[in-house]
Length: 160
Image (cartoon, rainbow, N blue to C red; front, side):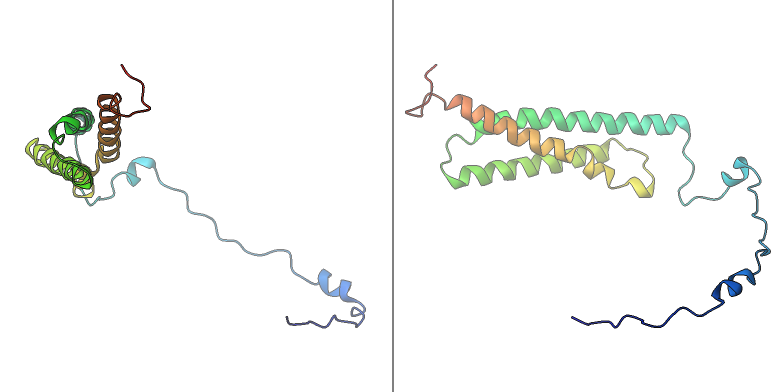
């Protein structure tokens, strides 16, 4: 580590005198006041303005897409238990995950068919809207339905 030497000299006599010579008055420029809020809203934006009806229509379609993916995740997760019953081992897992991805791409095609008028900054919402909920609900439903259907098969499981 670097060692620093302490200053051993006395403070300069009369240093208090130099502080009193500092000029306290400094000319400060006035701050410009904003003209009005309405002038700020007139600035051009990158995206064309969207009317309230178009915005509510867009929000309704995005909500419809979200709930469609939620419902499809639950239904497809339960269906995957029975569709891939004949496949054994590791292949069953990968087939189910591939099935989940294919159904998600199908929802993207359906979403593009809904003809949502999205600004260029929101184009990726077609893909990202509800993706996390879809994946987790699919996996949760698939695991729970598989566990419930194969509950009696395990030697230590509870027989129903």
